[in-house]
Length: 432
Image 1 (cartoon, rainbow, N blue to C red):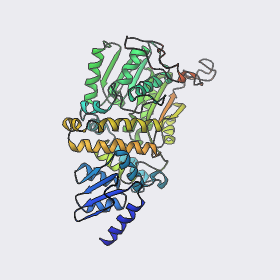
Image 2 (cartoon, rainbow, N blue to C red):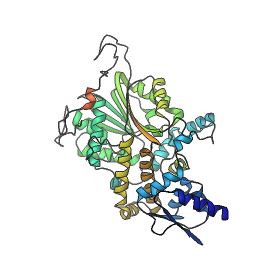
Image 3 (tube, rainbow, N blue to C red):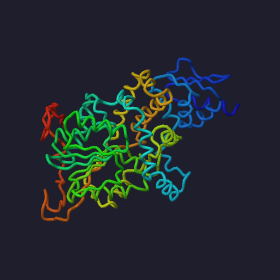
Image 4 (cartoon, rainbow, N blue to C red):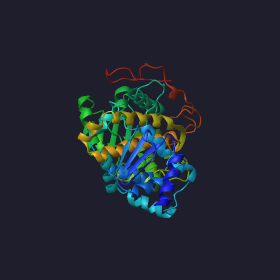
């Protein structure tokens, strides 16, 4: 115990802002510290002293640790305990070949369906507490610093539509369509015929209700389907995958992109928007944080660096034509979600349970911290399926709808209308 006490004292002295600790038979730190931990057993002390944040977080979910203090202060303490997992590099617990086969085992059809439903089918009303009104569960785009979360999510939807150069009559596939934000936005404001797929029963039912409410049946379809099982003779002019490919698994990424290429018309465009690792040698967050997310939030989720994503995309038959890093936008998005959840903790517990709420409190704030510090990143990758027609297209050699200029991505002034509006739901938010 003396050695552990010395470790605790050294740990507390190095932390920014201060931390107060209580455990059976002892305490450390100033009572006025902005962050206070109450530990119900001494085992948690060892995790704190050695920076095992994932184990501490798991103990918090199980009620063995209580945390008091603003989550921003809590995460500053956590970051100091963790250090820099990107600088530390690769996890060595699993050899590369074993990680590959584990990834394949984790991501067959039934297991993927179970893992997706574990996360997304918790409770629709719970997610509605802290998401924007459209329930867009992915990184927003704060084109202007004073945007609300709802405005920034609309700006993100419009950014994706403009990058894909959507126009009336095109067929759009939305892979992992969530609660239908992009699917319905594209149909209502850009006049596309849209098909969405999901493995979540809750999301499938929710979007189909919206399709009927908005009288879009016949123009928009939502299917309960694995991406590997989608067959379509007509093909799609455009494909979007937003916040979904994190569930694919690194061992199956090339096959995933090959499937998208097969579904895409020659010359068409595909957008892959998703979380990537902050470093080339990190397949999950360090200090046990990745294990915590695997256990309580996203079973089966795997991280790869954007360079690996680009390699798999090319191996799948697609040409990368544009890449944009939205990392700080996701940090701000996650803090907005975290703040919204904090304002409604009692209602969140009524809808789910205390353990779920505890897990999501740490998950949202911890991910916000990780994006701020560059431990995680978020990329929009725009790609084409070259059609081989060198002479035709927006530019000689383009071999696709992509003009190899970025003017269409910049958009119009705020408040301008979209190229097409199929409803009277209001002006589309275009941003500079």
